[in-house]
Amino acid sequence: MMFWLLSSLGFASSGLDVVITGLHSAQGRVGCSAFADESGWPGDPTAAKAAMLVDIRGDRAVCRFTELPAGRYAIAVMHDENNNQKLDTNTFGFPAEGYGFSRDAPIRFGPPSFDSAAVDYAGDDAQITVRIRY
Image 1: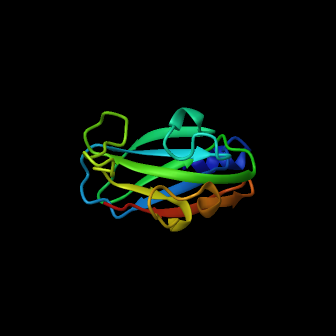
Image 2 (image 1 turned 135 degrees about the vertical axis):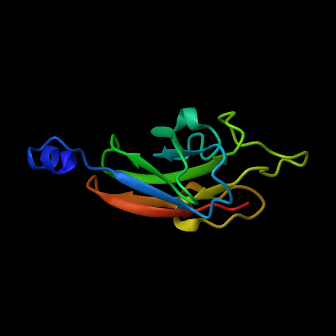
């Protein structure tokens, strides 16, 4: 009811919803980073245009980016199971926690390129799905 009232008065903001699926547990949180270019992609959330940590509900989570202007973005997602706010890796440098990318960008000998994960965002309400890999 409150959302309808706010949106009917012009106060609700549009946004890009990133629905994260495939989580194997509800432990920890999910981190999402939206990058506007290759700078820092995908491992440096401080270089992202926007980043957040969200709670897990059942086997999914949703990151809602409301401050993104229209543009081209690549989304990186991680399942931070131990709540240390970083993607942990094993001895060989491979991810020890779940991760995923917009457009289900393929991974070959390292993270996908910015271009292979980038999606166009018109600035209005939109939704994409990111599947977590372990």
